[in-house]
Image 1 (cartoon, rainbow, N blue to C red):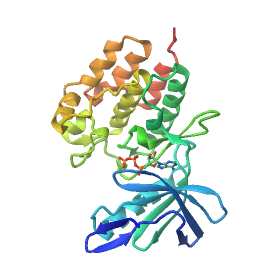
Image 2: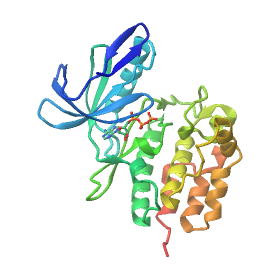
Image 3: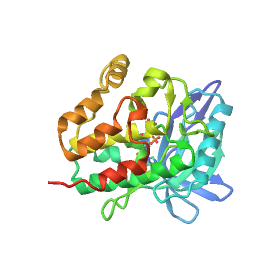
Image 4: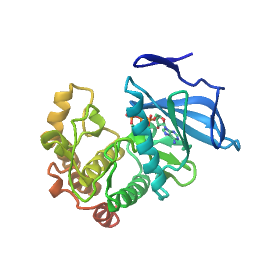
Length: 285
Ligand SMILES: Nc1ncnc2c1ncn2[C@@H]1O[C@H](COP(=O)(O)OP(=O)(O)OP(=O)(O)O)[C@@H](O)[C@H]1O
């Protein structure tokens, strides 16, 4: 049995075969799909034998009340969205001091597909769906702020790939302002220039993160080397290395990616819609 330390008490994590009951019925835990920084995701079977991805928020030594607030925020946010490219939430519940979200089970994540250059039609289709999703979020004043390849899930992989954006634990409601001043983040996967140099995030930060994803889909390589010290990562970002790498590619798509990766958020595309206006006109050799 796996044990977790949450401050003063030890709480057992669920194991395959165990059952968890919410007001909507019983969920039987299956295999662990994966672990992230803030959660563990299990395959599970729901009250009508449907398959879900059950995300358990990892207590990670945070006080009970803090974890509960994070879970509640993510649940309310997911419940408020109605978009075909945002992962669907079916249930949310607490069992034995642990918090769960029963989510639509997707086939894979973008992270699992990266490693070699994507064929242009696939890249364009994934970018189109991500742009449509970001425009929806930004129109509703929400910054995702955690747009890395592990959070871009994909369904119907064998048929017509359907993007499902997930993980709104960090997402922020801008409430009329354009900049969200926030504590520095430790996760190099989600750093953006304005956060590194001025301590804020904006809707255009999501476009920068999309630029990083598109660069990697286009080349098979990350635009930022994250296997180095944190200071070196922030230096690459502050000095504009990703944009320079994109420009050096010299392909039609690379010009769009380079504009997404501009250091100054004001010089990037102003909206996801503007990005698609350029992308749809690209001609591939
Ligand atoms: N609804 C889902 N369907 C299928 N797989 C999922 C689903 N949600 C998450 N996963 C997978 O579970 C794993 C863990 O996800 P989680 O969101 O906890 O962390 P992460 O995205 O890997 O990293 P981080 O915590 O840094 O964001 C990932 O491999 C992710 O692709």
